[in-house]
Image (cartoon, rainbow, N blue to C red):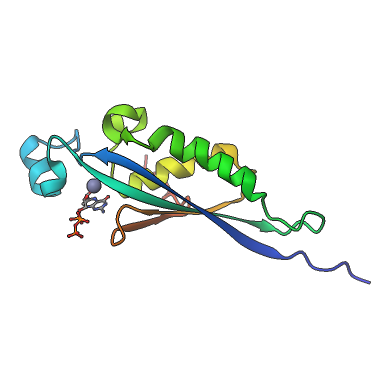
Length: 148
Ligand SMILES: Nc1nc2c(c(=O)[nH]1)N=C([C@H](O)[C@H](O)COP(=O)(O)OP(=O)(O)OP(=O)(O)O)CN2
Ligand SMILES: [Zn+2]
């Protein structure tokens, strides 16, 4: 008789962190930055209470009944999200954002790359970042093929 089919599931966990930032691109003049980013280019920055939902996918282990132990996922999210980002000035305290504009898109990529290093290979499925209740970014690790 055929063995029972493995069941695939997605598991999510949420964290919230507070941070401030300023939208400013080093590739643009001060005037261009102000025109592009408006109030978000305020030199002294502004703050958000970000919410992040991380989703992992994989087979439900028949012995443990888990795709991933949520206690482990909590620790990975602490290391990948809370420690580098919570109560930080993204642009000044997080080296990644010294050269990368601290948009929510790039915050999602930063979190993805950090988590990918910690999670079992191929299990990270989605990073969803709420900058506000209205402004939401989803990143699933996609890249375009380099033209270089
Ligand atoms: N594509 C993106 N656009 C913008 C981002 C971003 O991360 N990605 N970020 C901002 C600013 O950070 C800003 O804080 C958001 O401003 P706004 O849309 O005005 O949202 P608010 O909640 O401050 O204003 P409401 O009017 O209450 O919605 C801008 N653009
Ligand atoms: Zn902002």
